[in-house]
Image 1 (cartoon, rainbow, N blue to C red):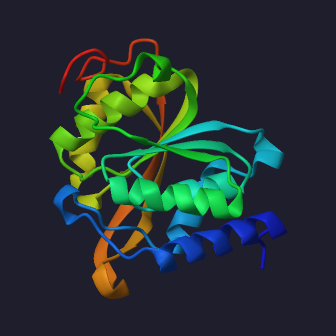
Image 2 (image 1 turned 90 degrees about the vertical axis):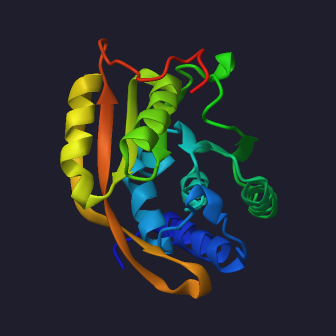
Amino acid sequence: PHLSPREKQAHELILVAHARRKQFYSMVGQCPVLPETALRRALHVGDAQNVGKKKIICVGDDDLVSVGLAALGHEVISCDIDDYLLAFLDDVAKEFELDLTTLELDLRDPVPSNMIEAFDVFLTDPMSNRECFELFLSRALAMLKPDGQGFTAVHGPTTKLFEDLAAEMNLDIIQWHRRHNRYYSHFMKHHRYESDWLELAKREDTRLPHGVEEFA
């Protein structure tokens, strides 16, 4: 009841998108969050009418958070390796006239030059191990403006691993929302897995494990 009309509309569009989705790409660990979690993630960025229109990159988007962000008035690019997911998001964006575009991108490849430090916000949800954290954050932080805002999911048992990695990278953790993210699996079954949601900020001396021009 506390949501604004536009926030409620964003929730409805996220529900529609999740209800229509019929395929998961388990080879890359897809396990989407509940629609309500997707909305909560979008609300951490905020309504464009209140915070200004942001240019946002979703680094992996099987959670369909991009739909909620675009419904809140932001300019969103969803990048993923899953061509089915990207085609699905293109259809949703066209039907509901959202400022949402897609890009097929393998994060192991170098960062496209036109995307370096081009975004106000990034959101990502990698598998919680060192290799995935290093890859996803290297690419996401490279695409983030110096004063930008970043968000990532971290599985609770890997808290110490992430804290150590953030210290190695000179990466600031601004907020840590415990048990924020809930997921579902095939057949719409509630998954036992859950994760935290972290807000991050890079510094002038932030070190990326993988350089923007190198293959990872």
